[in-house]
Amino acid sequence: MAQRRGPSSHEKLEALHEQLITAVTELARSDAWMRMLQMAARFHDYSPSNILLIGAQRPDATRVAGIRTWNTLGRRVTKGEHGIAILAPCIYRTDTADRGSDPSGVRPSDSAASARPDDGTPEKQRVLRGFRVVHVFDVSQTEGDPLPTVEPRALEGDAPQHLWEHLADLTRDAGFQLERGPCAGANGYTDFTARVVRILDTVSPAQAAKTLAHELGHIRADHEHRFTEYATNQTCRGQAEVEAESIAYLVSAEAGLNSMDYSARYVAGWSGGDPARLRGAMTTVVTVAQSIGQAHATPPTGEARRTPDRVLSASHAGSAPSTRVWSPAVG
Image 1 (cartoon, rainbow, N blue to C red):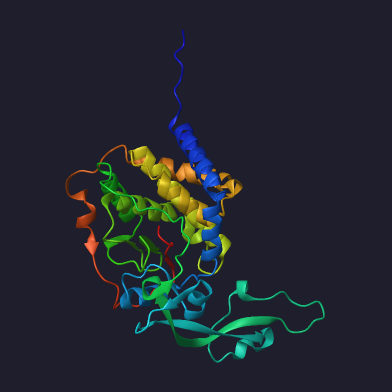
Image 2 (cartoon, helix red, strand yellow):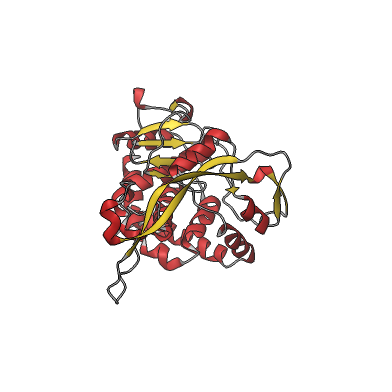
């Protein structure tokens, strides 16, 4: 009698991905999640330079906004608090014909251009002419109505044996330096220009490994080239985050680390709870997760081993900001 074949690694990962889709769909239907999304829509996504500025002035910042945004949410800045200085772009509209004489020398991106009118009038472009200093405040500097939240819960405890070392080796093999340090409210980020991956140094080993799997997902899924408008296009950024966190969930689960409670909330936030977006990413997610898992079959040995505490730790407070930083809300 022929022996029944068990599910392949690919099939197991697909089944795990379906579990994640189910959890995300159920979460997105909850009233608490809808209230949280309505609140989150009022917050801005900050540029890489501003992320570094926020981290340098207030490393413990988690939720940052201007006074008017806090006021609309029923909160007021506490008396005596000093704002966090960031840079706000000064954007002007100009005709396409004037672009060559733009004194700023800044070429507006194609995504910023409006459609050419049918009447033949010059096409309008949004042009960056400089920056001005504005001030924002962290939620800890405010008081008032509690914010609705169904945010990811940080993982606790240890990571499975060799998981961090394996992910760290793959990150370095991809040409990235791995650091531990402040991340301005996120658990980690990937800087494609400086070729640096940084993981927050105050999270548990389990959370650190999961976040590193997320950042490695960005790298191995080729988000640097597939999602070139990550910093300016919310839909583009959302798809990249859905893929990266889904990869992190599968890699973690295969290694014995259950990140479902965290990953489902994170993916729901970026996907809007749309199962079609998750299923559309399945091929990429499963393929990348499988490649990471297969490499994990042989644990690192000798000097290649590193625990989260032995990775280079450095502050970027005094370094020049990069223009290609991928920084999820929590990661």
